Length: 138
Image (cartoon, rainbow, N blue to C red; front, top):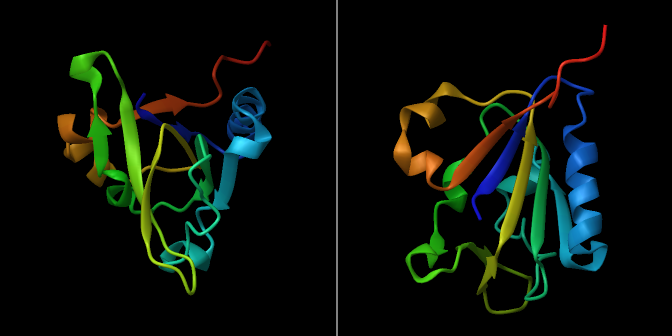
């Protein structure tokens, strides 16, 4: 499955929907990180992930967030499978290990135009979901 980028103004339900999905996948199989935190620039940013992680939520990504970190995928769609995102997990005192995550959700208020300029190479990996999901009742 493609990664999802939930985009919209503040208080439109992006994080709430991501958390609801995590309850479906399983809280014990979900890792949530803050996209705007300086830790995301650290090589240890993904140290909470393990082989059991099924869903990675990166919440509140800034406008300059680097989605290119997530371009490395295993694509088994031609054989009836799906995408799995390869992420290098580094933990202090341990050898780095690459793991595959089947589901990733990003939340952001703004998505830089540079990503849409990449065209199909970006859209093959990411679906953009605009919030609010429906117009409010008047």
